[in-house]
Picture 1 (cartoon, rainbow over the protein chains, first blue to last red):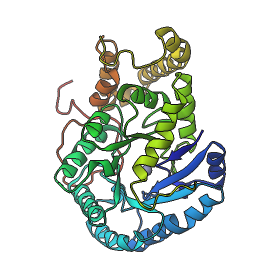
Picture 2 (picture 1 turned 90 degrees about the vertical axis):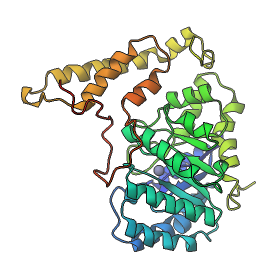
Picture 3 (picture 1 turned 30 degrees about the vertical axis):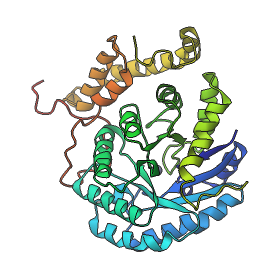
Length: 268
Length: 104
Ligand SMILES: [Zn+2]
């Protein structure tokens, strides 16, 4: 088994998690910039976080032979503060020069407010200006359908945006079709309680096929499983799916999407 | 005929063998949740749209139509695309109040 977890908040995880991930065949993780569970006071707080995920975390992962890449932004949970967003956006271009940065993310909306959508649009503009890949967070629970719809409509306003360079994450049964139909990549995030269970993720692969779909643990500081991707592999085997299909979903698909960034280079 | 018929490689029998026990367990958890609500202190009996949505979803599971997960998801979702004027709360509640303003 070999796999890539395209959505893992490793700053919140222990070194033991890297160890377990390495033992189960993880070759790379990509870490989207996200909310730490509390609001940061200033743009300087974000700058330290960007240093953490562009410098310290790749070194920690490398000790286990795992490639670590990241995405930068001011996340949707803090996107309501337009002034903070303006300050943080101004600091991002400098970090886009780092060799392990893949793009802008995870941007999106949380409660689908006007300010959140404006902050989202500013990030998309920055990504397009710097020709970066985009990783998008869709809201959870009752806001997911609405947030996904609003995000797809906002992206549709930009003729220069290439859907194949955008991954709209945290898809569920009621949003996956609109994401795929519009040509985007999507991600199923496997959570023990909320989001998508292992069996529902396998259901969606069976129903929609494996094209442009990746799976991830989205492990963070909350109840989550850093080994969710290998658990998904076991679920797929339990259904009798081929190793070729499983490898496509957990390895080849992320390589195809992430490989559009010149910074994504897997060893051998 | 369900439009995705035949997409799961397991037979019906195999699906039941694999998933019956865990699904049975979840069914009992839901039954216990509903019993617990009934046993709650009487002063907490006011309308809760989350429970209304939950009960509507349970009724939906008993019809013979396909795509139950999508339909339950939409029952629990805000179906509008209206942007909020400003942030009301940081976290979602898990259900949309489709019954807001309705007489019980
Ligand atoms: Zn995340």
